[in-house]
Amino acid sequence: MPRKFRPYIAQSLGDLLDKMGFLLLSSPTFLDKTGYFPEQNLDTTFYALNESIKRLRHELGDDLYSQLLEMSDHMRAYFEADPNDENGKTAEGQKLVLEMERMIEARARST
Image (cartoon, rainbow, N blue to C red; front, side, top):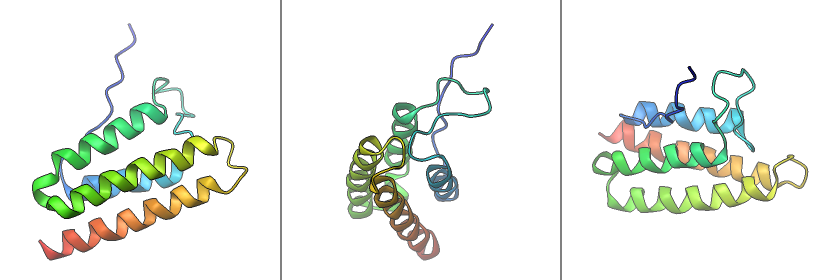
């Protein structure tokens, strides 16, 4: 019997940084190419990202929390606008991933 896919919600800033690496490698569609997670897609990926950010709000602080959620929304829009990586929007989304990663790393170093 197939298991219900449950996206992983990060439990630490390190886990969130790992998630950012996944975003870079799997963009723009976030579809699983292995067959192990056929329900993984853009919706489940951004659900997990936003829930991870929410879960870590106390470690991120309110200002960074708000910035990351806003950046997540913009990133998703870029990836949705370029599902075949043909018009440059995927690269814009990936730049946001890198910027978010930099911000999270800076917070992790300061705690």
